[in-house]
Image 1 (tube, helix red, strand yellow):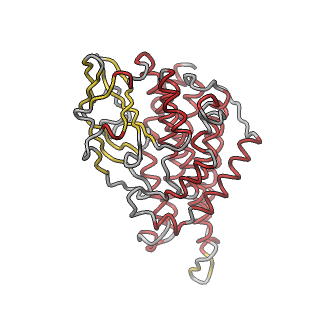
Image 2: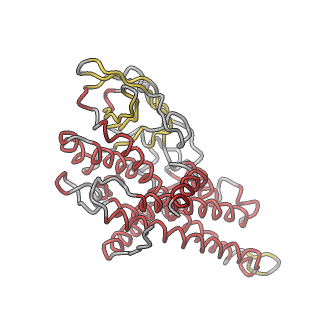
Image 3: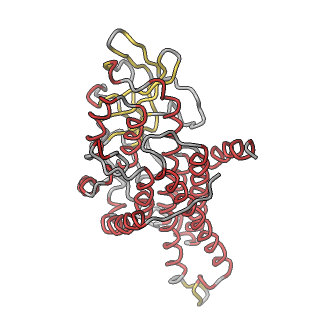
Length: 380
């Protein structure tokens, strides 16, 4: 496995800009104000992110993007995680990667420029809640120039605002990826899930009876490889976001330790609280190293190229470390705040909810470490 790690001037500039933007647009008060909203994000903030060019960063220049590579999204994901800022950026980026990697020239020309310009999109992969499933129950049948779908997808991120869905289905006994536009769905096809992390939005989407033109089928020969890459890229985005949330959670803990007094002393002076806080910092530093190592490998890869073994190892290591770090940090934050930490009004609960949800996105730590064992031990 490659040990290369770099943090370019370009990444640093993106990180500084993204942190300042997210800090300004998503204070905790704004996060809480959006918890009960339908979309879970502020449309004006999303439009500003589009104006900054964030959805276009990983899209090649020939299709209206900035051509900076997928690694350029990692500093933004970390910054969004630190501010608990949720928008359709991740979903749209993954959909664009699917089209870039498996789309035919017409698909790329039609859709990549739209997604780069801020049209929300998403990927519909799960038939249930298990990222380890290798087969899909969403079936497709071909009749001349049309393809008809059956089945449904669960936990489709940002389904409520997505204008195009990249759907994993089975066609002729093989995996396939199909583009479905929003107006091709039934009026009642989207049913929102109730999520533990109230800053996120996902829905169950029925594709039963949806008929689309055969031209909306992506390159069938690339479906399996693209599915694997989408899972890895998605896990890296979640890892970067979780790393940012861990940093914010640590700030919340430290602020409380420096202000709360018990028995006439600041509670931050007690070793029983100092040591776990340092553990959070160590886990955070390890997660940051791993997400930027993965970003380095992805920036060096050709746009749309299949991820190699080193990139797979890096993405899986980043996901396992980052969600473990956030889970530990969220748990300590609640515990350190005492009885207040278990209340809805305490900000610590925002992080422990994010930790539990992030753990399950694109496979939990156990899922990735199980696959890492095969990758690393078989190569030893």
